[in-house]
Image 1 (cartoon, rainbow over the protein chains, first blue to last red):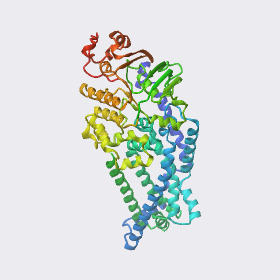
Image 2: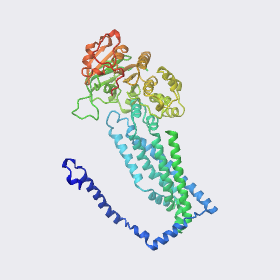
Image 3: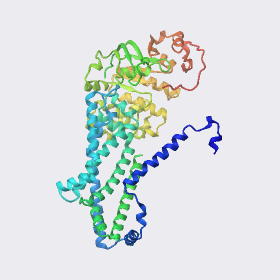
Length: 277
Length: 281
């Protein structure tokens, strides 16, 4: 081996550690595969192969009966509506919490350290955001289905709460990681916190905030599909019915609609960023 | 807005991020500036010029000593009143604090935020209120055609002048201007200094500017403060600043005595004369 012939000073001192951590990482993966009962060869056993192929074979051609398409179109519209309403509510909750929790807009922190009361208040809001987003939207949906009954309202509320937690956290991080010179200068020259946000922070970070918001809207569309599984309305409710009946043609039509919706979100995001950039 | 009087009583300032062993950025410093006075602060890089400006702007809290603005100690005020007082100060940092995607008109009108109500400031975002005043302020800085231009379409020198034009719109009685000429050519420099000193005189506004261009400082400001190592080196009427004062102030930093002083002062300095303006942060 070349390594043994080399002078000791030319040996890469990082080599041993790299080998060790690569092997250690692989060793750690084994118990995880165990825990997840990862046995991919089951996929290729003749029995499961046959049923998989039959189901996938049904995917083509997609179900295109007019009555069904009309219903899918209406449910797709409801899905977008659930995602959009959920996002608007989430933003209405998240934006005030972002403004209250971001350290950039702290007036007491201008000369150095933040005062105790605003610091505690900001921490409290951060904890509230953690609480909101640590409960999965599926759990919120199950809760709200019991409270407001089956239907889209439960989906809207579930998305609103979980996404408020995510948006509030990431908005605050975007605002704190961007350029803050213009905002601090406005605060130093006597403007109010919210004024400094609108005249300094927002124009500086508008594209990042928009692109993250639209990406979250896309996630909300996908998420509202899953929420449909537990009865929170939309395309998902239709998808679970078709899946349960092993109706591949209907499933493939619905999945095609999902692809179209995600593509639409991507397009909107691109357009918005071009306008704001 | 009447000019503000400034008084520093053995003021010492440490940067919040500095270690305890590091020397204070501003050693105990005492000086008084009358309302409406115009003062230039000169000194080599790292002398504490920006720190002095930030301390007077209530952007840095003194670690000891006292700052008085119009006889009032700002750090004894509750946060809300302190913020109201900050609205009567205008601090123009060396790097123009303009969001790149904002239009010039909005960036300028932001100077009025301290006097605008919350709703009025939101309204002005949608349809700028006071565009004619913003235009007049831009015209003083030779930028009248840039009112509706986005900041990121402006050159560095244009941005710096927009940052300074903000002063004309601010409801302030004290202008604290940090290195206003760092990105400007000599012709524009003269225009900017004349505009700032002329406007400050007409309004009775107190003006305190840090400058690297010693010749400009001596020619345009009646009083010069020399800072070195965070200490007051001299505080003199500009007519009494001699070559010796300057050589002592800039000892070991001779290259920063950038431009030649004007002829009447007859200060033949034994330094190389770079043709470019030295930018120091």
